Each structure stands twice: as C-alpha cells, then as structure tokens.
Image 1: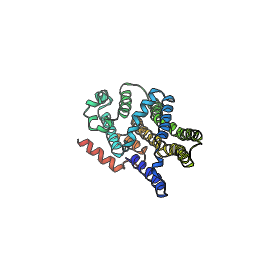
Image 2: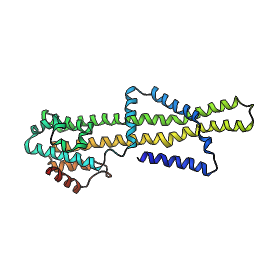
Image 3: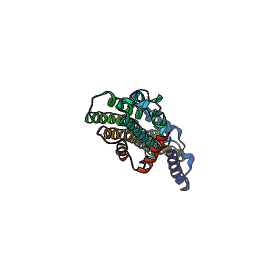
Image 4: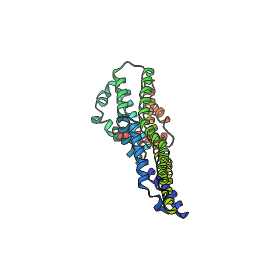
Length: 286
C-alpha cells in the first residue's frame, strides 16, 4: 500500500508541478518513447538473468504492493511456538516432538500458530533443526555453523530479485538517452519542416531522457529497495529461530531461550517482555 501511495505522490509532484508552471501535460504523453524505454528494459532483464531469477523476481514483485509480511504478530506466534516446543522437550524429552516435527501441519502444537505454518521457509528451517536435535549427535557449535550457512544461502536467494530490479533501474536512464537520441535523429532527418513542427519533435526527444530518469529513480529503484528490505526481514525471522534453539541446546530454560530470540529482532517489530509473556500464557491455555 505504501508503494502505491509513494507512486501517487511522485506523479502528483512531478506532473502537478509541471502543469502549475504552465506546461502542457499532453506533450508528456509519448507512448512511442515509453515503448522504446520499457521494451529495452524488459529485453535487458530477460537477457541478463536466468529463468530462475526471472521467475523469482516476477513472484516477488506483487508482494511489494502489500504491507510488511513480518510484523509483531508473526514474531509473537513464532516465539510462542518456540516456547511450547522447548517446554515440551524439557518436560517429556526430545523424542516427544518427533511426530510434531515430521508432520507439522497435522500437529496439534503447530496448528495453534497458523502464521508460522503458512511460512514455508520458517517452518522448514525450524522443523529441520528440531529433527537434527531429535535424531542427530551434533553439538551446538556444529548446528550453529550449519544454521549460519543455510541463513546465508537463504539471504542470498532473497536478495536476487532486488538485485535484478536494481539493474533495470540502473539501465533506465541510459535507455532514456537512447530514446532521446532516436528522437534527435528523427528531428535531424526532418530539417525541412517548419520551426514549430521541429520544436515538437525536439520536445518529444527530450521526453525520452526525462522518462528514463523518472522511471529509474522514482519507480523502479525504490521498488528494488523494498525487495531488499523484505529479504532482510525474512532472514531476521530465521536468525530468531537460530538464537532460540542454540540457547536451548546450551541448557537455558525455554523462557530464557525465547528471550534470547526476542533480543535479535528489529526494535520496530520486537514485542516487549510482558507482551511475549502474556502471549505465551494465552497459548498454554488453548
């Protein structure tokens, strides 16, 4: 929603200011210039990326129009689930969560936390390492090293759409210049026309440069920034799981282990100690 609001502000400011200065908005409507700039950008995007990157980018773009996926409610659910899992392990042993980990969607424990069940990456990360804790002989240092490698890979994959979109943004001003040069060539080939008509042709050529810069810095570049922020937020969720599980492996009680995980969250979404405590109490009564 904020992306749409931002776009409206950009369009209103740029074109509104142009109109207030006495400019004619009709002169800015140059579909051929948009065709050249947009077509070149799309073509460059296809040439410069593999099918996997193109697919990941197209899948990620619609999410930029929605609100933040990872908010306080999601983190509360995550830490509530972690607390319950670790408390069950502490009370009944690691083997007690084997069925929950093997089939989390059918687990009465996991089913109380639908937001986590809906997040494939978080659910797989959590259940995979709980499974290692149940059936493996790895110590905390070995698991931490494995977690770090997986989080790094996840973060790298999450940033792929942002980098692909940023490369489009970087190329748009140049494509705008290409469109402008094509317009100048067309103008130079029409030197026999009256000055008034030549002025129109020159104006159309200049619109190409304007559109390339505006699309780059006003529309596509900020979109790459949003995608990058979403990648960081997704990684932070995995880091919270990592810190909590490692604290439990090192012998800390469930309540304290969850507190370790809470501390790594961004301050804007981090629930307070009392909010987490109340949420855990409510979860235990369900």
